[in-house]
Length: 162
Length: 178
Length: 145
Image (cartoon, rainbow over all chains, first blue to last red):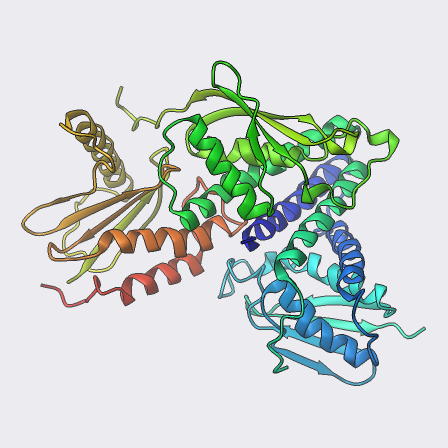
């Protein structure tokens, strides 16, 4: 038995650390703009970059970009979030939308509009995780998340072609 | 999206996820902090915050009853290591007074794939574990200290985490009563 | 059968949560005063039960009963205190309290990083999950006697 709760609780503390550290930095420089979650995204990026390496080492190469995305939605997502992505859409021009109807790090927070303004904190690590994983598979991208009603979340992946 | 497959050993993936994310966090902390001691302290505090929550999960999942003595407590923490970190440390090196003991880990998933550069040799990389133990035990009314005695990252054979019992905490009295 | 109301206290006696379903009579006190009175009683009865026990008290205080209602008490090792008032025929309330702790408190309070564990619980999803769990329990049948 190895337990998911550890990572869930660790992830929360990771978020807290980044936010508290920002606050101390902001105090020192007396700036007052919105929450800067870029460090959190970067921690996700380096984690994703390294973990995908280990996950795909023994797998055959992916046929194409779509094949890679399908892998991310199924095997990758269920290995990490214990469920698959519920819906994958693409315009076939480098934009992919991955929808998780019950995203793990939001599922305990709310199923209403409550705390909606704080939801970016709990999806940013995963944006980085996706960007890092794809980067190591040779796909440069920008990943953002859209939350309208928790615990549902859409991850938008924009592939950078050049 | 019908494939309900699980191509991966989720247990292993999760353990790697913890290892890698933890590594990335420590790297970020090193960037943010003035010195290594601050990072060690922050890791302990982060562990403490995790411990106060993790203990509730542990109690709910295991239905554990109150510990008879410190030996019993050590055994329960040992099983928590197994449950949450996937490794089972040995409980050893009891003090003659029975108020201090160690967990000895042959392998430590947290330090898998990790090597400390020379300028971080003083970093207590695994301090988070000490923090978790302190936070979790405080919630069940045990005030303890916990620290790292041996560290594989510093070339020791094992990782040894020491726990010292300080005192039992009492239930708070209702306001206005003595 | 019916469930009247629930109180959840933390280890320091702060009221974290209160909710009522079929409560037919109010005390006339503020919720704060009522909670203080309740916690004081729990504290005393607990220590009394343990002190006076002619055998090893083991679980200690579990419930008390009047001709009209039963007060069920469940305390975790971390000092959280769950109090549920039901009618006198309610069965399996201890299991229900354990479920409230395992499935609702641990999942929606402990694992919600936005909640401070020593402050009153203001999460809507916690409230909804607790309400659902209580209402689907056989102990709850909203027919008021």
